[in-house]
Length: 148
Image (cartoon, rainbow, N blue to C red):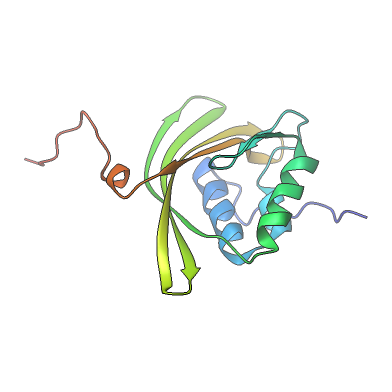
């Protein structure tokens, strides 16, 4: 029997839902993580190098399998956002800490998180992550690098 969804700690904005999502990854809390997702059949998740996972049950199973190996020490950095009335698209650079025999190492991913405002608050409807490198963490941008 599946437990009822736990509301994200913060429902005020897409930023709050995103913070709760990454906190749930870091603590391995599947209930908190799934509460960040919209309750829609067509929500979608793509992990680096993985297939498209569609629907709450499949997404939950994928994260359950990942959490079987421990929590995911991922942090979103350099967030870029495009927001409209009911949708917020976040492009993030993820730094992921991995424990190896040689000690902690970092892996990187480039992710797009899409949030929609629902009756329950802001909820994730898509998470798409691609493998990244330390070089990509430097981010290419049209924005000036020097502030005047």
